[in-house]
Image (cartoon, rainbow, N blue to C red; front, side, top):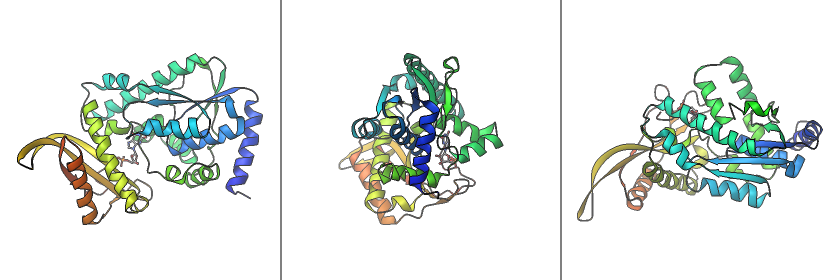
Length: 319
Ligand code: XMP
């Protein structure tokens, strides 16, 4: 019977036989797939698992600390945290083009990950959070966005010279099965049922050139939006929701003073497959509350707009 408990038991057996006493390396992003792989491998082989978590400076508010609290502190998993914000930001400086930004972020990630991996001389295996749809996707298309997405999700260009053997324990599972496995393994359900977050992170939610100032403002706005969605029981009713930073300035008034600050767009969609999507018809009072909070609490943002574009033609992300 294919219950989560059985799948876990089965996988653990297979993993133990496969890796024996070897050490296994995993790129932990904090997303569902790599998180479930981490929990599963930890249960199977304990301290033989070493995770590398790269903070690229394009993560959401407190995300780095949350990942460390969850996996290192709470679960006792060996996690190497690499704070590489400066590296990513300087690599991105001056770049405006969305696809070029994606490439830079992907390339930089591989470099950072490779450097960390090279320090670990006993590692023989590389674990990846590949799930069944990824397998189909990369078989179907070796080019185009699908492939780009995959290379960011999973460690696309793994350190060639290290000759690591690949272990992909979720390869035969669909997303909903992976989520159930995560819950069964003790991961909190609000992390397992999180909205998808793109590999390039805030890098594609800051239009045009990425700057630390923009990322900091965007994190705050996004955090308010998500916090209120959860508080109003709307988070699980949307498939993906986030804020987008628009590097244009707009005039506002605040008390007696005049403000000339940046604009943030809110995006929330409902979708089954992410190929088509409907903009979420969030209640006006809710949008009003979020907009007020963002403008009042964040010094540097003077205007909030709501994205009412469906996909197609508009993509879910703005870049
Ligand atoms: P779009 O914007 O193409 O997004 O309608 C569809 C889904 O894919 C995600 N997305 C990405 N995920 N790397 C990723 O890992 C990317 O470069 C990327 N671009 C878009 C997006 O968040 C949505 O869930």
